[in-house]
Amino acid sequence: MPGRTISNRFYYVYVLQSMKDYKQYIGYTSDLRKRMDQHQQGKSFATAPRRPFILAYYEACRSLVDAKRREQYFKTTGGRRFLAKRLKDYYGRNNSKLY
Image 1 (cartoon, rainbow, N blue to C red):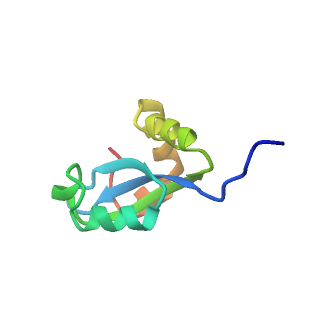
Image 2: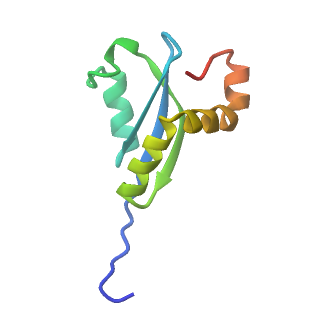
């Protein structure tokens, strides 16, 4: 398509699980490794008291708009149900809950 460039950039939607209280945090970023380090180091106000975390799930999107939309979906009742079904084996093996 003329006038359109294809970017090699990905945007990641991720689910962290606190090892302290087993609650989850859902977010998006363009640099998953860097963002995970920020969460682990307590540089995120929203998650600092619940450290440490494990990365329970992530998805890659080509569009920032799509990643934001997916993040918002995961925060709905339907999205949480999707994650619970998608991660059923993981949460079953680790005796933890998906909140």
